[in-house]
Every structure is written in C-alpha cells, then in structure tokens.
Amino acid sequence: MPTVMKYQTFAEFYPSYLSQHSNRTCRQLHFVGSTLALACVVMLIFTGKLYWLPLALLSGYGFAWVGHFAFEKNRPATFSQPLYSFLGDWVMYWQMLSGRVSFY
Image 1 (cartoon, rainbow, N blue to C red):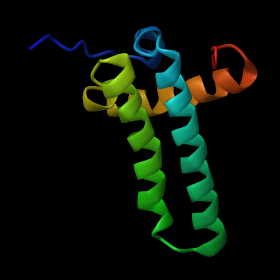
Image 2 (cartoon, rainbow, N blue to C red; image 1 turned 30 degrees about the horizontal axis):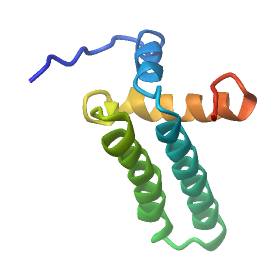
Image 3 (cartoon, helix red, strand yellow; image 1 turned 90 degrees about the horizontal axis):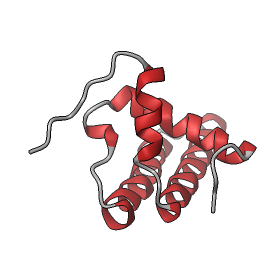
C-alpha cells in the first residue's frame, strides 16, 4: 500500500488536492454533490428537519466518491486528510464558480 503524506497546512495540501481532480467528470460530480449538499443544508435551516443533514453528507460525499472511484481512479483524500479534504472541496467549489478552476 502506498504511503499517504500527511500535510501540516492547508496551503501545502491544496495543490495535491487539485492534482487529484484532473478529470473533468470528477470535478463536475464534486460540483453537483456540493450544490446538492448546500441545498440540503438550506432545507435543514428552513425546516428544522434533521433528516436533511445525512442527505447533505450523502449527496456531497456520494457524488465526490463516485467521481474518484469511477472516473479519477484514485482514493479520495477524505480518507487520509478529512478536514483538509472538506476545506478543499469548498475552495475548489468556489474556484469553479469564479472560473479559477475549470468546470469543463
């Protein structure tokens, strides 16, 4: 099994995170999953129904993991650096919205 590098800072981690998202379908699935997760969180806030929380997690991570296993053919960083991976998802999401990371 390959050794997984542990990063000390998010700034060190993020370039590696981006390199694990070179496949456009993987990035698109991340975007869709993150958008659905945001919608679930909004529904949680407005309805107060706690079932929206697991739906947010399922949609966010589910779409991302399909992207990694089926298209990117790599292991999601969630398993080795969960906090940095979560932050990376949202930084990449914003960068895709703002055009800094390609959606296509």
